[in-house]
Length: 200
Image (cartoon, rainbow, N blue to C red; front, top):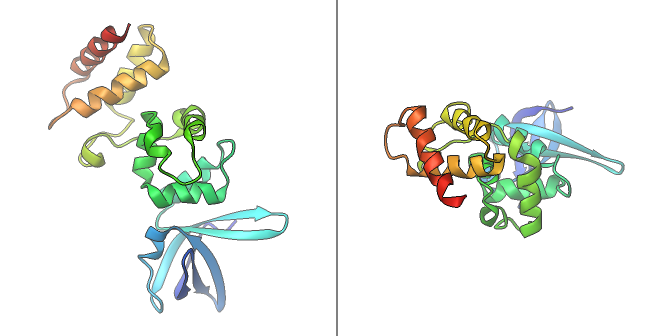
């Protein structure tokens, strides 16, 4: 598998760039945001994912390994192929995609051409537990990752009898209410329980 390419950009088009590596020009399909960073005649490094089909070998390129990993993860959901996975990353940043899936934000997901309400719900259902750390806070800036308090609060809520879905919604609501320094986990847990108490 071709995990990355490094070379000179010899051409760019609406949806691909040609990167010359060792005298060979590789056509790499990229989202508009990635293409915007490339300049003809300049060196570039792209994380890549090779999609093998019976009649084709297609190389997809990304600005970093995080976007590439998410591209590959999205394709594990039923009904999602490489073109749709790339369309998701053309509309949203990797952090925004993770946040939308973790928070079951189907409205954000349906902004991607080709994803309807049912498709968005399927992405949430199939990928929520595998999406990885989610940046929390205003646009993910200065936030906490999913490995810190969100997981602790979520596990505590599930242990107290709420479903994983209810726990996720409560954690997302608590995260949005944080302004400034993050309070201790027990305080956050009480907030989440208070929120869930209203929905029971």
